[in-house]
Length: 191
Image 1 (cartoon, helix red, strand yellow):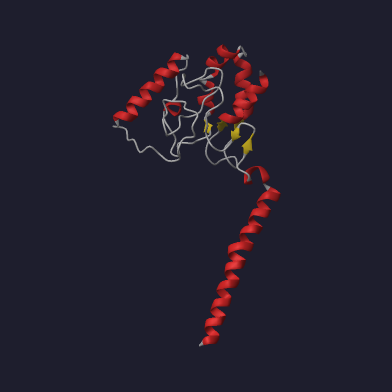
Image 2 (image 1 turned 135 degrees about the vertical axis):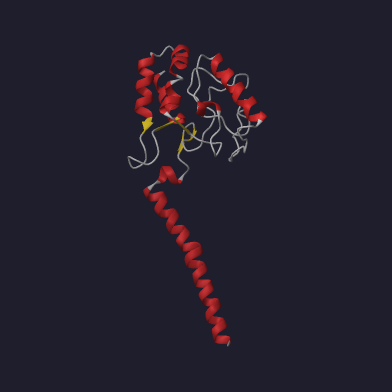
């Protein structure tokens, strides 16, 4: 009986070391060696490319800075560019929610103030509340606003959007998207 207990404890210890530590270290090492950018959070000089965030053109007095492209609003407070990271998760506001209607209406008004007729995505949060991507159409409706604020010709901005558009995964999964952070970094290089 004692022999079986010793074998069981030894097996549990060996499996804990192998599967709990060695496997994790090997996985981390392989990820760091083959995919260092992704393994370290896809960090660029302006933040993570995989988490939606405010661009540095945001101010606390304006919801939208017309000099930059904007993504979907975050879930913590879509009407305030407060410089704080949003929380992850849906707001769970349904189509009959007065709060949702009020927020969407206020965002539509804010977009109209800067000369943009917003798409649905630009006035509603994503399921995670932190979506880094918008559709090419979401970016294209912002071209007149950005062109007017920066003096960059609209044709050049449309070309920039086309260059920054990523096709569907594997050529057929999902739809084309534009990463707002990468688009604004490319825009900053144009200036």
